[in-house]
Length: 490
Ligand code: AMP
Ligand code: MG
Image 1 (cartoon, rainbow, N blue to C red):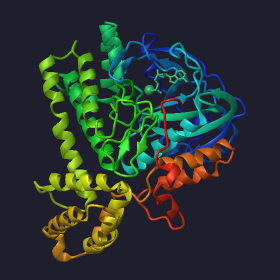
Image 2 (image 1 turned 90 degrees about the vertical axis):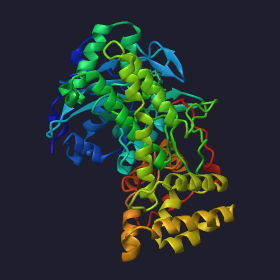
Image 3 (image 1 turned 60 degrees about the vertical axis):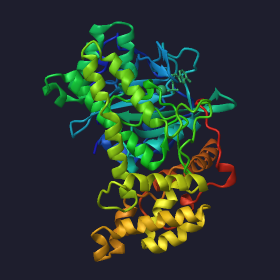
Image 4 (image 1 turned 120 degrees about the horizontal axis):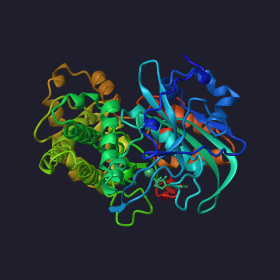
């Protein structure tokens, strides 16, 4: 275990030079105080958890102090936002402080979000508000615990620095960790500005640092694209299986590593709704829950376009064609597990679709349904869940087919409900990050009370475990919490 001063830096992205990023110092926020910290994220840096209690911790992560070896840089990128190309984006309010090399030989980017203005801030103030910083923190560490690839969050620091959004709020900083902050939009930037030499440098950096196995292939860039397609197929399958709605799937918010990245107005489904739009600013529903699948493919096509200087279009197109079948296979696999099935049957896809339609028609809670399905024997669980459905005939028909499907599996003969329950609870969370829960702890934190956000973070870090005394966090939203309007403004 290390102290904060023992970290080893190896700033590979900074060394790419000024075509890729600009040196900018963080602008500190006033009277910093630590809101919440992830000890799990601290271990990625080999940091001793007690380091979070030191005074220098909040100072470092509020822009007041900097390691000597840090090289703070704002990265340049572009990207497609809501389908239109924006030629110049970049880190407008976040800085890559440097890359920490841990004892396992992994590099972790330290990215300080809300660190002040940069050459890429456009009209923005370079700040992040406490509300959105807490939301990103909670989601990052919760998705990780759910087994969904994601950037990580080390801590949030609050301040007395005022920030104006729809109302007066206060500035905060989030320390984000990821093995890379390269987005699809980085490739698009160098492609559309016709800087093909830099595009190649970027590609080689990504291959060398993050996809070394692709360098062994005959066509490394095609292998890279294939890897990104595969990772995204799996990532989106996990989002869809667990009801996660990202909200702003612009190509600049898509990580080259295939991890969930740049949290904004995200939401987990409460009631199942395939058409759910979590982003209040998304009028057309481009990023609705069910659209996430075709939109991911659309974004991959945008990345593929940026790789055309290195790879034949036909080969890229063929590789892109792998996305949907791979997605579908992962999704079915996850949903079968959520239903407690051990084997695959051709009729499973229809069984799953019928269930989702029934849930949609009756506004059934997506998380609790699966958890309760594993709580007791199929017969007992279905009898209890039946009350939640309006189309009783439809539900009964589905339940009969589901019971027959469960009975068709070998385990039915051994008859161990205990094993089924353990297996299902290991994939069906009891606790999910519901927007109303986030809202409650944000309101407390805005009043200076950080105990609720810390407790919620702790509960959501063990989402599959029964946590006696904390059952209230598994409850469906109250009326006020059902339709919270979350916008891009953060
Ligand atoms: P986002 O919607 O957070 O993914 O951000 C889109 C772009 O706007 C990125 O280039 C951000 O760096 C930039 N941006 C967002 N908020 C701010 C802000 N408050 N100040 C400066 N730039 C911002
Ligand atoms: Mg972004």
